[in-house]
Image (tube, rainbow, N blue to C red; front, side):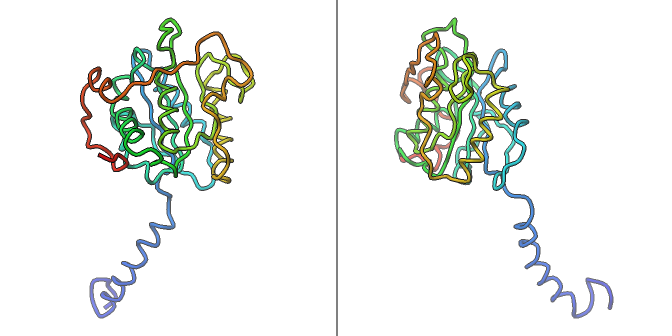
Length: 241
């Protein structure tokens, strides 16, 4: 009579347990609502830096950090449940690194077919580049930042570019280790007041233009497919086809 599986108590207990379990789950850990996405190759700077970005998160009320994911493995549809997105990428001759191609394709598809579709989101971008490739220097971080804006996402902190000036940091040469704490501080403020003004795309150069160009070379889906192949994933729910 005293065992859970016997007697008339069992159905009532099972029923109350069925009610309590979802409540317990709801009261437990939040689902991640901050996505960390990276594109990296060769020296692995951006893969290392997305780790620095993750490690720099000291906890912000209302935010739960997801594990960093390379662009090709990222579920673009998961952005519907995200408050913040932080992207760290380099470029390969001005195009996405091979492990970032799927994210870039999904983003470009969303931006061109359904502008404004990520208006619930706020973002920040950190970029790595090699100035010896002058013409395409920092192209992918800059283009991703621009495309997220076209999708309606709000930039909550000035883009970081390694070695470039950054007015938000008061430096002539940005380093990831200095950008990360300031970015997370801005994230905390952005979550408290999500209706604030977006930070301009070119805010990093507000006080010092630096020695390198500020260009971004935009490419369309046709060029992306010609260079790196078709989208392997299904188009995201944000794309209007």
